[in-house]
Length: 308
Image 1 (spheres, rainbow, N blue to C red):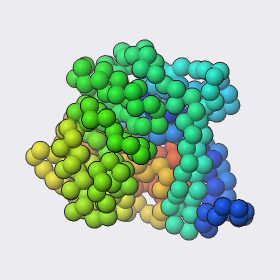
Image 2 (cartoon, rainbow, N blue to C red; image 1 turned 135 degrees about the vertical axis):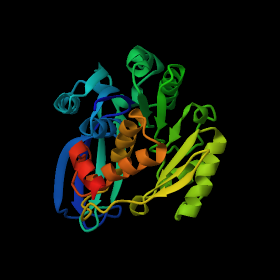
Image 3 (cartoon, helix red, strand yellow; image 1 turned 180 degrees about the vertical axis):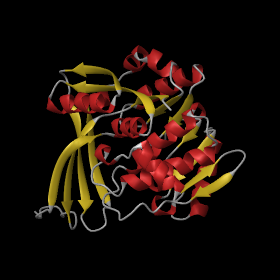
Protein backbone atom coordinates (compact mmCIF):
# COMPACT_ATOMS: atom_id res chain seq x y z
CA UNK A 1 0.00 0.00 0.00
CA UNK A 2 1.35 3.44 -0.95
CA UNK A 3 0.20 6.52 0.96
CA UNK A 4 0.75 10.25 0.53
CA UNK A 5 2.72 12.02 3.24
CA UNK A 6 3.99 15.62 3.10
CA UNK A 7 6.75 16.49 5.56
CA UNK A 8 7.91 20.04 6.23
CA UNK A 9 11.15 20.24 8.15
CA UNK A 10 14.90 20.19 8.24
CA UNK A 11 17.71 18.15 6.86
CA UNK A 12 20.96 18.24 8.79
CA UNK A 13 24.07 16.15 8.53
CA UNK A 14 24.45 14.05 11.67
CA UNK A 15 27.94 13.97 13.14
CA UNK A 16 27.65 11.17 15.69
CA UNK A 17 30.32 10.64 18.35
CA UNK A 18 30.27 7.54 20.54
CA UNK A 19 31.94 7.75 23.96
CA UNK A 20 31.53 6.70 27.59
CA UNK A 21 30.34 10.16 28.64
CA UNK A 22 30.21 13.79 27.60
CA UNK A 23 33.32 15.87 28.36
CA UNK A 24 33.12 18.76 30.79
CA UNK A 25 34.15 22.23 29.66
CA UNK A 26 37.89 22.34 29.06
CA UNK A 27 38.26 18.56 28.89
CA UNK A 28 39.16 16.37 25.92
CA UNK A 29 37.97 12.76 25.84
CA UNK A 30 38.84 9.94 23.48
CA UNK A 31 35.75 8.56 21.79
CA UNK A 32 35.04 5.06 20.56
CA UNK A 33 33.36 5.83 17.24
CA UNK A 34 32.39 8.51 14.73
CA UNK A 35 30.09 8.61 11.71
CA UNK A 36 28.56 11.20 9.37
CA UNK A 37 25.11 10.47 8.00
CA UNK A 38 21.79 12.00 6.95
CA UNK A 39 19.64 13.47 9.70
CA UNK A 40 17.31 16.29 10.70
CA UNK A 41 13.90 15.69 12.21
CA UNK A 42 11.95 16.38 9.05
CA UNK A 43 14.18 14.28 6.82
CA UNK A 44 14.32 11.42 9.32
CA UNK A 45 10.53 11.34 9.55
CA UNK A 46 10.26 11.39 5.76
CA UNK A 47 12.67 8.44 5.46
CA UNK A 48 10.80 6.52 8.18
CA UNK A 49 7.49 7.04 6.36
CA UNK A 50 8.92 6.12 2.96
CA UNK A 51 10.48 2.88 4.18
CA UNK A 52 7.20 1.59 5.62
CA UNK A 53 5.26 2.32 2.43
CA UNK A 54 4.46 6.01 2.27
CA UNK A 55 4.74 8.08 -0.90
CA UNK A 56 6.54 11.04 0.64
CA UNK A 57 7.28 14.63 -0.34
CA UNK A 58 9.96 16.44 1.65
CA UNK A 59 9.58 20.23 1.89
CA UNK A 60 12.73 21.99 3.08
CA UNK A 61 15.64 24.27 2.25
CA UNK A 62 19.29 23.38 1.68
CA UNK A 63 22.60 25.11 1.25
CA UNK A 64 24.48 24.50 -1.98
CA UNK A 65 27.19 22.39 -0.38
CA UNK A 66 28.29 18.82 0.33
CA UNK A 67 25.72 18.30 3.08
CA UNK A 68 23.01 19.54 0.70
CA UNK A 69 24.09 16.97 -1.87
CA UNK A 70 23.95 14.31 0.85
CA UNK A 71 20.30 15.31 1.44
CA UNK A 72 19.33 15.08 -2.23
CA UNK A 73 21.11 11.74 -2.63
CA UNK A 74 19.39 10.37 0.47
CA UNK A 75 15.90 11.35 -0.71
CA UNK A 76 16.50 10.03 -4.23
CA UNK A 77 17.61 6.67 -2.81
CA UNK A 78 14.48 6.44 -0.63
CA UNK A 79 12.09 7.48 -3.41
CA UNK A 80 11.19 10.75 -1.67
CA UNK A 81 10.09 13.71 -3.79
CA UNK A 82 12.22 16.76 -2.94
CA UNK A 83 10.26 20.04 -2.90
CA UNK A 84 13.18 22.11 -1.67
CA UNK A 85 14.80 25.45 -2.22
CA UNK A 86 18.58 25.91 -2.35
CA UNK A 87 20.51 28.93 -1.15
CA UNK A 88 24.06 30.27 -1.15
CA UNK A 89 23.32 32.43 1.89
CA UNK A 90 23.30 29.67 4.53
CA UNK A 91 24.89 26.23 4.84
CA UNK A 92 22.94 23.03 5.12
CA UNK A 93 22.44 22.30 8.81
CA UNK A 94 24.43 19.95 11.01
CA UNK A 95 23.97 18.18 14.33
CA UNK A 96 26.44 17.07 16.97
CA UNK A 97 25.16 13.81 18.45
CA UNK A 98 26.75 12.30 21.54
CA UNK A 99 25.89 8.61 21.94
CA UNK A 100 26.64 6.75 25.17
CA UNK A 101 28.36 3.66 23.79
CA UNK A 102 27.01 1.48 26.62
CA UNK A 103 23.31 2.46 26.70
CA UNK A 104 22.67 4.11 23.33
CA UNK A 105 21.26 7.23 25.05
CA UNK A 106 22.05 10.50 23.34
CA UNK A 107 22.48 14.25 23.68
CA UNK A 108 22.20 16.50 20.63
CA UNK A 109 23.13 20.01 19.53
CA UNK A 110 21.50 20.96 16.24
CA UNK A 111 22.14 23.96 13.98
CA UNK A 112 19.32 24.07 11.36
CA UNK A 113 21.34 26.15 8.89
CA UNK A 114 19.38 26.77 5.68
CA UNK A 115 16.29 25.05 7.11
CA UNK A 116 16.19 27.79 9.71
CA UNK A 117 15.47 30.27 6.91
CA UNK A 118 12.37 28.50 5.54
CA UNK A 119 9.80 31.25 5.05
CA UNK A 120 6.02 31.40 4.78
CA UNK A 121 6.50 32.05 1.06
CA UNK A 122 8.61 28.89 0.74
CA UNK A 123 5.82 26.87 2.35
CA UNK A 124 3.16 28.44 0.16
CA UNK A 125 5.22 27.55 -2.92
CA UNK A 126 4.86 23.90 -1.87
CA UNK A 127 1.16 24.28 -1.13
CA UNK A 128 0.05 21.81 -3.80
CA UNK A 129 2.14 19.06 -2.20
CA UNK A 130 0.55 19.78 1.18
CA UNK A 131 -3.01 19.96 -0.14
CA UNK A 132 -2.54 16.72 -2.09
CA UNK A 133 -1.39 14.71 0.91
CA UNK A 134 -3.32 12.41 3.22
CA UNK A 135 -1.20 13.47 6.22
CA UNK A 136 0.98 16.55 6.79
CA UNK A 137 3.81 16.42 9.35
CA UNK A 138 5.98 19.22 10.71
CA UNK A 139 8.28 19.99 13.63
CA UNK A 140 10.22 23.00 14.96
CA UNK A 141 13.67 22.86 13.34
CA UNK A 142 12.27 25.44 10.91
CA UNK A 143 10.77 28.80 11.98
CA UNK A 144 7.45 28.65 13.83
CA UNK A 145 5.82 30.91 11.23
CA UNK A 146 6.65 28.39 8.50
CA UNK A 147 5.33 25.48 10.57
CA UNK A 148 2.11 27.37 11.29
CA UNK A 149 1.58 28.16 7.61
CA UNK A 150 2.04 24.52 6.68
CA UNK A 151 -0.51 23.48 9.29
CA UNK A 152 -2.93 26.15 8.04
CA UNK A 153 -2.66 24.98 4.43
CA UNK A 154 -3.14 21.36 5.45
CA UNK A 155 -6.13 22.15 7.66
CA UNK A 156 -7.77 24.20 4.87
CA UNK A 157 -7.40 21.21 2.51
CA UNK A 158 -8.81 18.70 5.00
CA UNK A 159 -5.44 16.97 5.44
CA UNK A 160 -4.66 15.22 8.76
CA UNK A 161 -2.06 17.28 10.64
CA UNK A 162 0.68 15.88 12.88
CA UNK A 163 2.74 18.41 14.83
CA UNK A 164 5.88 17.13 16.51
CA UNK A 165 6.93 20.08 18.76
CA UNK A 166 10.61 19.26 18.72
CA UNK A 167 12.88 20.72 19.71
CA UNK A 168 10.49 22.44 22.14
CA UNK A 169 11.19 26.18 22.36
CA UNK A 170 12.09 27.84 25.64
CA UNK A 171 9.18 30.29 25.23
CA UNK A 172 5.55 29.10 25.05
CA UNK A 173 4.27 28.28 21.60
CA UNK A 174 1.72 30.66 20.03
CA UNK A 175 -1.76 29.72 21.16
CA UNK A 176 -3.06 29.69 17.58
CA UNK A 177 -0.82 26.75 16.69
CA UNK A 178 -2.54 24.02 18.72
CA UNK A 179 -6.03 24.26 17.17
CA UNK A 180 -4.41 23.48 13.80
CA UNK A 181 -3.17 20.11 15.10
CA UNK A 182 -5.06 16.85 14.77
CA UNK A 183 -2.19 15.20 16.64
CA UNK A 184 0.53 16.79 18.78
CA UNK A 185 3.37 14.35 19.56
CA UNK A 186 5.94 15.53 22.14
CA UNK A 187 8.24 13.27 24.12
CA UNK A 188 8.46 13.50 27.93
CA UNK A 189 10.95 16.39 27.93
CA UNK A 190 9.08 18.38 25.29
CA UNK A 191 5.73 17.81 27.00
CA UNK A 192 7.19 19.15 30.24
CA UNK A 193 8.51 22.26 28.49
CA UNK A 194 5.20 22.93 26.78
CA UNK A 195 2.95 22.36 29.79
CA UNK A 196 5.07 23.00 32.87
CA UNK A 197 4.27 19.47 34.10
CA UNK A 198 7.22 17.21 34.86
CA UNK A 199 6.55 13.97 32.96
CA UNK A 200 8.09 10.87 34.48
CA UNK A 201 5.09 8.52 34.76
CA UNK A 202 2.06 7.68 32.61
CA UNK A 203 -0.12 9.61 35.07
CA UNK A 204 2.07 12.68 34.58
CA UNK A 205 1.69 12.19 30.84
CA UNK A 206 -2.11 12.06 31.17
CA UNK A 207 -2.04 15.41 32.97
CA UNK A 208 0.25 16.96 30.36
CA UNK A 209 -1.83 15.56 27.49
CA UNK A 210 -4.99 17.04 29.00
CA UNK A 211 -3.29 20.44 29.07
CA UNK A 212 -2.22 20.11 25.42
CA UNK A 213 -5.77 19.23 24.43
CA UNK A 214 -6.96 22.17 26.51
CA UNK A 215 -4.70 24.39 24.40
CA UNK A 216 -6.72 23.26 21.36
CA UNK A 217 -4.98 20.17 19.99
CA UNK A 218 -7.54 17.55 18.94
CA UNK A 219 -5.44 14.59 20.13
CA UNK A 220 -2.24 14.28 22.15
CA UNK A 221 0.35 11.51 21.99
CA UNK A 222 3.22 11.63 24.47
CA UNK A 223 6.06 9.24 23.72
CA UNK A 224 7.54 7.69 26.86
CA UNK A 225 10.62 5.82 25.66
CA UNK A 226 10.77 2.29 27.03
CA UNK A 227 7.31 2.76 28.62
CA UNK A 228 5.65 3.16 25.21
CA UNK A 229 3.35 6.01 24.23
CA UNK A 230 0.25 7.55 25.79
CA UNK A 231 -2.64 8.43 23.46
CA UNK A 232 -5.32 10.83 24.70
CA UNK A 233 -8.32 11.66 22.52
CA UNK A 234 -11.87 12.80 23.29
CA UNK A 235 -12.92 9.13 23.25
CA UNK A 236 -10.04 7.26 24.87
CA UNK A 237 -6.91 7.34 26.99
CA UNK A 238 -4.64 4.45 26.03
CA UNK A 239 -1.11 3.54 27.09
CA UNK A 240 0.41 1.61 24.19
CA UNK A 241 3.33 -0.51 25.45
CA UNK A 242 6.75 -0.36 23.84
CA UNK A 243 8.00 -3.34 21.83
CA UNK A 244 11.20 -5.24 22.62
CA UNK A 245 12.87 -5.58 19.24
CA UNK A 246 16.33 -6.37 20.62
CA UNK A 247 19.23 -4.69 22.44
CA UNK A 248 19.24 -0.89 22.29
CA UNK A 249 22.12 0.51 20.25
CA UNK A 250 21.11 4.16 19.75
CA UNK A 251 17.97 6.13 20.57
CA UNK A 252 18.62 9.33 18.58
CA UNK A 253 16.15 8.50 15.79
CA UNK A 254 13.39 6.92 17.88
CA UNK A 255 11.06 9.92 17.97
CA UNK A 256 11.40 10.50 14.24
CA UNK A 257 10.76 6.81 13.53
CA UNK A 258 7.61 7.04 15.65
CA UNK A 259 6.27 10.11 13.83
CA UNK A 260 7.01 8.73 10.37
CA UNK A 261 5.29 5.47 11.21
CA UNK A 262 2.35 7.28 12.77
CA UNK A 263 1.84 9.38 9.64
CA UNK A 264 1.65 6.32 7.39
CA UNK A 265 -0.74 4.47 9.71
CA UNK A 266 -3.03 7.50 9.96
CA UNK A 267 -2.99 7.92 6.18
CA UNK A 268 -4.34 4.38 5.90
CA UNK A 269 -7.33 5.31 8.04
CA UNK A 270 -6.34 3.16 11.01
CA UNK A 271 -7.88 3.94 14.41
CA UNK A 272 -5.61 6.11 16.60
CA UNK A 273 -4.59 3.33 19.02
CA UNK A 274 -3.64 1.01 16.13
CA UNK A 275 -1.68 3.83 14.49
CA UNK A 276 0.23 4.44 17.73
CA UNK A 277 0.97 0.71 18.08
CA UNK A 278 2.39 0.66 14.54
CA UNK A 279 4.47 3.77 15.30
CA UNK A 280 5.82 2.16 18.49
CA UNK A 281 6.94 -0.86 16.46
CA UNK A 282 8.77 1.35 13.94
CA UNK A 283 10.54 3.16 16.80
CA UNK A 284 11.42 -0.08 18.60
CA UNK A 285 13.28 -1.45 15.59
CA UNK A 286 15.06 1.85 14.93
CA UNK A 287 16.78 1.89 18.33
CA UNK A 288 18.42 -1.48 17.69
CA UNK A 289 20.60 0.13 14.99
CA UNK A 290 23.07 3.01 14.86
CA UNK A 291 22.25 6.29 13.17
CA UNK A 292 19.00 8.15 12.62
CA UNK A 293 17.78 7.89 9.02
CA UNK A 294 19.88 4.74 8.40
CA UNK A 295 18.18 3.02 11.35
CA UNK A 296 14.64 3.23 9.96
CA UNK A 297 13.04 -0.18 9.30
CA UNK A 298 11.13 -1.45 6.30
CA UNK A 299 7.42 -2.21 6.32
CA UNK A 300 8.14 -5.94 6.22
CA UNK A 301 10.32 -5.71 9.33
CA UNK A 302 7.58 -3.83 11.18
CA UNK A 303 4.93 -6.35 10.17
CA UNK A 304 7.11 -9.20 11.44
CA UNK A 305 7.49 -7.49 14.82
CA UNK A 306 3.76 -6.76 15.04
CA UNK A 307 2.90 -10.37 14.28
CA UNK A 308 5.05 -11.76 17.09
